[in-house]
Amino acid sequence: MIMKISCGTDIIEIKRIKESIEELGDKFLNHVYTDKEIKYCESKKSQKYQHYAARFAAKEAVFKAISGRLKNKYAIGWKNIEVINDENGRPYIYFLDTEIKEIEEIDISISHCKAYATANVVAIFK
Image 1 (cartoon, one colour):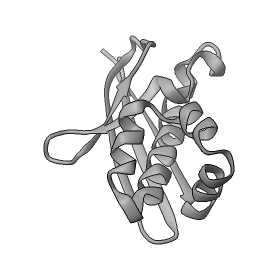
Image 2: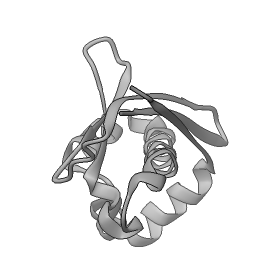
Image 3: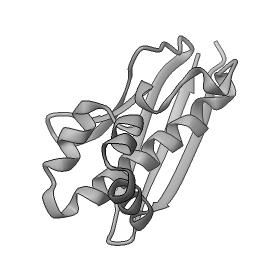
Image 4: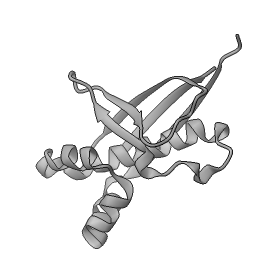
């Protein structure tokens, strides 16, 4: 069986996400993030924008890693990808209301500092 590995990466300025949230508020949040993601990020208080930006970068990285397998790039939206943490705090991807049957495994790494958030995704396809 031949497996295909696909990678995606993204980096974003935290300031851009902060400005979008401050300007558009719930309209932006509810367009991009799931309820679980919003609850998680809001729990981070003064560092919430870093966590929002990291999840934004993660979703972009997922799009980049799986886009070659989508028949239509609009077949999956922001809220079809949920970035949540396991009991040890490690992030993982959960697909909502969509199924990408060829994905064997998907792994993510997220990082952020004061100014930037970044994410890397590796997807293994059957």
